Length: 210
Image (tube, rainbow, N blue to C red; front, side):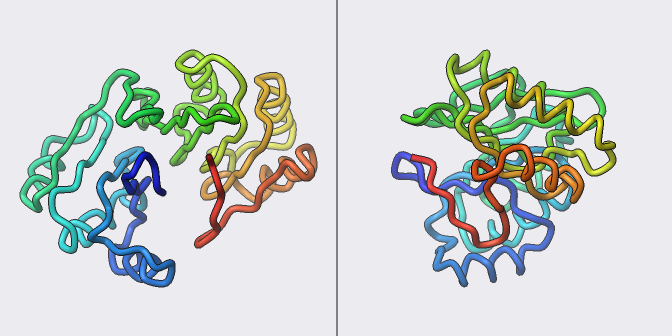
């Protein structure tokens, strides 16, 4: 994504060659990447970094504080600059990390302060998607115009999902784009409840956030 004159990648997928192939199809040059934001330690979110860093040196890589130290060593050895994040902070003008959240699988999410409101971008939302939304609202008071990413609801039942959808609505979330680990049932229910405010995500899909 392009922001304030910089190009940011949010998570890198599990396979570097696949990441680079998708970038080529989309006309994105690895040499133009400035920042990589890794939401959590799972390999399907971090594995592509190694191949990417072979094509672009001096990447700024933002990771949760809980990442193992061996990750830093491997990344620095490939020319990256690693920035560990524990508490909420601004990483670029108008772009914030929620700070590390969660107990078992720790994670941080991205928050964008745009003219229309706040945009929340999650990896898997392991700490709980509602908790992430609350953190975003605490950092940037006002409305949330979009929550995009994994909501981690693939194992939730219908009642649990509807309860979460209502919490979204009560929090003033205007549009949703659930993907990745959200689960088919949850995606179907969000589509039903949000109607035309439901955005279909997917590889290669462009979504304007300005």
